[in-house]
Length: 479
Image 1 (cartoon, helix red, strand yellow):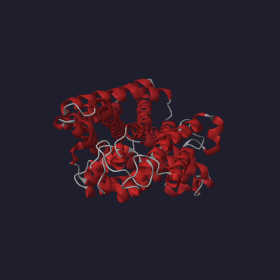
Image 2: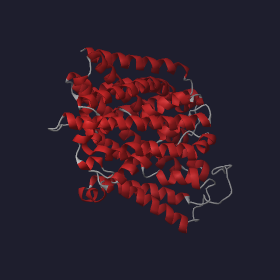
Image 3: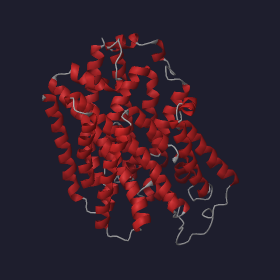
Image 4: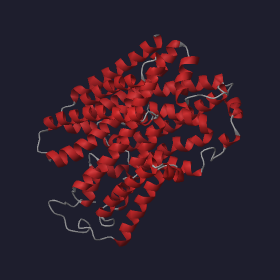
């Protein structure tokens, strides 16, 4: 009971921060972009807290237990790719003063309904899968602590983070992230020290692992590792949550360094989580029924009550931070690109648009409960997220890096690549005979998108948006 009370206190502080910071949100722009006031320090912990939610805490420990050091492919792919993203195209994205990735495409290729709808839908599907993973993790945590039905835990968690995300948007999410990120980092370090000590120390733990746990490929296999880099790495390049945080900075330098250092912290603590899983392999030689529960089990069994309460409170905070971040990003994508730009066409006052955004946020948050209920595995949800985030990867790369004036890659080929790669990825995931070929849909989806875009470069120039003079409907963009 003491642990549960401490965890509840963490949630209460989290809510207080979220609602307090929501007081200054007066417009839809502030709700979506955070008023571009965030410094590098805030961005470090906001990026880390968004990147390592409870789903990642549970999954990384599980992968360390199941695969040893080869699990670091999955863990480090995301930080490496996002750091590259920040230093290569981060400044250009910031200086374009855009709200979403569809804004980038429309600035380069001209305003288009498809350019707004298709990327926003696919990116939102990816983030909603990650969001559902946080629901599932919250339900598992509450089940461990109280024996309550995991579905009840999902509902309670949803009610908490939806409330302050609806109230304050990105500002509330990011300021709460700072609180959550600090305590989560401390909690991971504490659990690592305790788990390693229980296993007899770092050297003894490592000596107890199977031989293939120490190899570069390990038990995963080359195909699975490639999927890790596609799923957890390259797909994060188009994860709007990171672009959104970079764009919320007070200047480009603060955005680039804040996001990059947040990813360094993510990588280091991700390694510690994998090591916790490896220690559990030594502690429980008979096997563990649910490896995703390792972090929770160590916190409850081996820590003093008050310390365990703080660590699990930090874990709940991690759930809230990631969930709120993905919820706000999804609401921004769908609200800005579809509701504002297509349905209402910005003919409404900023105050009315803010109310619309809050309603959209609440609907998305509640609807994602269905996904979490249908797919209870956190790892499965993270893999599905990669499938949906990979299809827009190449088009966004072309628009933001290679095709600065929209004269190299025909826009219609980009649209075809997104739709076809999403369809291919979906079928490889749901048809068992296909899934066994390449370990899921991430790799074939990526290859499909790449091939179609390259064909477009080779035989294109037929798209009316490419190379034509600017018009009111398709304005040109200064480089």
